[in-house]
Image 1 (tube, rainbow, N blue to C red):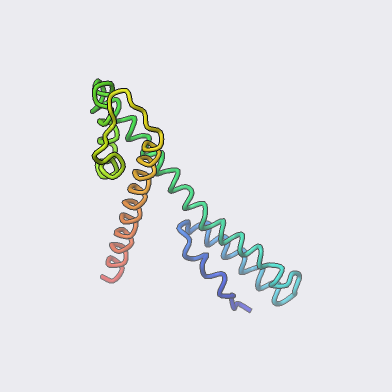
Image 2: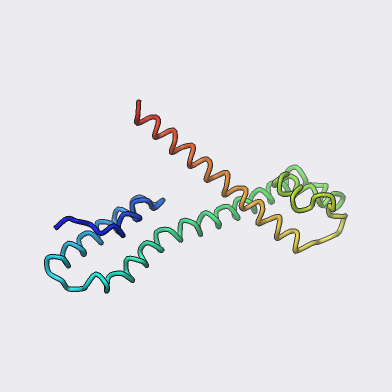
Length: 155
C-alpha cells in the first residue's frame, strides 16, 4: 500500500527540502511496512511523527534567529570600526543609528543616549528589534524569490 497518512504532508512544506524528503521517504517505508506487516501500531508511531515534524520546523526558526543576531552583531562591529570609528565617546548613538535607523528611532526615540551612558535594557530591546527587522526582510526576500520561481515556471 502506498497510501500515506495526511500527517506526512507537512514534511514537504519544511524549509529544508533534502531533510524533509529523506524523512518523508523513511516514514513512508516504515508506514508501508507496518501496514503490510505491523511491527508498530500507528499510535506507537505518533510520537515519532510529532518529533520529526517539530525537528524539521523548529531548527529552521532557531537558525534564522541565530543568523539574524549574528548579522546584527556583524553590522554593529562594522559600524563601530567604519562609520563611528572615532565618534563612540562623543556620540554613543552613532552605532545603533548605523545598525538600524528604524529600530533606533523606535527604541531610543526622543531619549537618546548621553556620552558615557550605558542602558542595558534599551540595548537589548534595540538588538531584538534589529533582529526581528532582519528576519522580516529575509522572509520577504524568500517570498519574493518564491514568487519569481513560480512565475518563471508558468512561462
